[in-house]
Image (cartoon, rainbow, N blue to C red; front, side, top):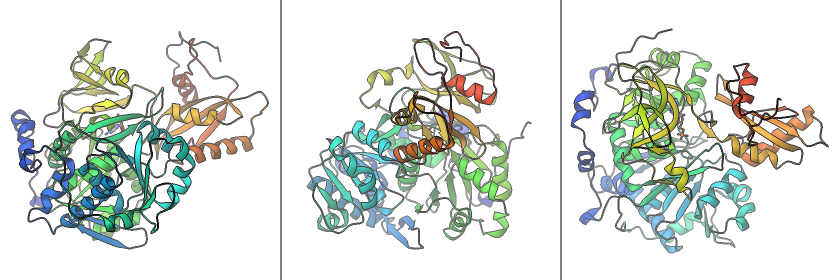
Length: 584
Ligand code: AMP
């Protein structure tokens, strides 16, 4: 069915959006003018994300304004002002210095949403380390893959996560010199330190060293289809994008209270759960707990959240819970709701309008882009089901590409979503994989790996992924990573992993497994393999279903044809079978 565009209304007339005239702002736009809205390090020493997010405000009349309002699992709360955050991040930067962590070295966090994570992220950026968040629900294998590829020199984590996920890997993690535990008081052998004790002893003064905008700042892992996770490197100049999108896509104003529900283990939780709101000097709400509809509505109400950034999976879960949130809770302050990560169905956009107040503004970006690229902007009509239009400074097209040429397609035609290179938060490389990086670019275009189309009005519509990556509950899952883990079990000869459409999670991870001759399929073996995968990978990545198959379809060169496994499972057309080896 066709959905009529939704004309958005703003703040009950109270708040004018930062971007009122899309065409005028786009045509007058320059990155230099965005740079002028930031401070830069004193005495022309460069551009550092943490300085813009924290110290700039701590030196202004925002110093005593609440930067972070944290809510713990058990009702405890903590408020940190911009000044508090400056002192804590200075201390953290000094802790890194004291331990001999050099500029350019990787510092990981393996933490849930707790205050130490925010301090560690920003303190690392101050010390010019490369901050790399790890999802706390990862099992040991994904943690190992990312820490070893990222050559992590230090990790900030909890005692429990250290014992379960890191300690067993330490002799394989040759670069890991220091471990900082946030919840212990005594240091122990093996350079395992108490972060609170280290912080206590560290100076509150720290001068951020000269920072070139091209200095590495962030390392975010994303999934690949044919190899282990890819580490996308971002630089301090990305701060221009974080700021610009905070201004135009999230429409942040000084009095806003902002809440991003994304886990800081992923890119959204860093770019928009930490950096963008602080750049705008607003109050950033952080909730430690997992999804709970009632708790979430209470937070929106009691924190008086004005701008909310969440994800389709979460919205679908709220829709399923039902009720009449707008009548039950006071959501009158909520001015803008945005969503990212997966396709947002038109019903969800309209559900937002009916049940929350504002309709939901879908937007699109990915780890490699570092910031929001396409959005249903506050001042534009929402086209339900569409990802929106490119942000100022962003040029997006639909292309058909060969190895050395990208042809721009006409409106209505389906092809690969491509972005003109040169935006500030564009990733600067895949760690240790230059060739893979270069392959993402043709002519002046970055190829996103997403299939989409653009309509006559300039709105973009998501069609699907061009590769085999699975998106489940907002997490990118590499079929290769799951297959590799399954094959470590003695029973498994081969595995092919695909995403199966699922109403709640978007896609469900399903594995097709061929057993070694001495094993026979049984429910018990299925349960064993599910448990084995969960222990290795963590619940967010592990398959939810396993089917036994004698023979997996393969190409003539021996690669498992995931596409065919999926098509057969769904009873869809099998497509081109010319490369199929076995007639299975
Ligand atoms: P990640 O790198 O984990 O942030 O995932 C990025 C991928 O998520 C994109 O390449 C898309 O495939 C998907 N994605 C992100 N936002 C949207 C959206 N609004 N609609 C559809 N897919 C999306």
